Length: 115
Image (tube, rainbow, N blue to C red; front, side, top):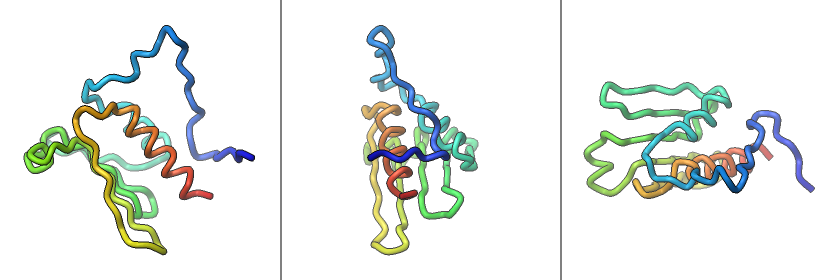
């Protein structure tokens, strides 16, 4: 049984002719659109990095295209989770990970945390 979560945007199902979504164009739009749609504040830095934190402060998402330390380690996206009942953990994605995949990961993570 699947329950609808009113806080998440409606899923978009692309048709076969519009499957250019698996790209590695380093565009943050799919992730930022999801998070802004959920009411998360986005802080942009002068270096063009973006940082988002969930309203409850337990989930951080960083888009780090201009962070020298992140690039040295092959990281474009950093997700840090601080659960209330478990150890904190981090998931990082490299520059070859499509932003749509990161958005899908976050949508699943956010949906799971609201159950």
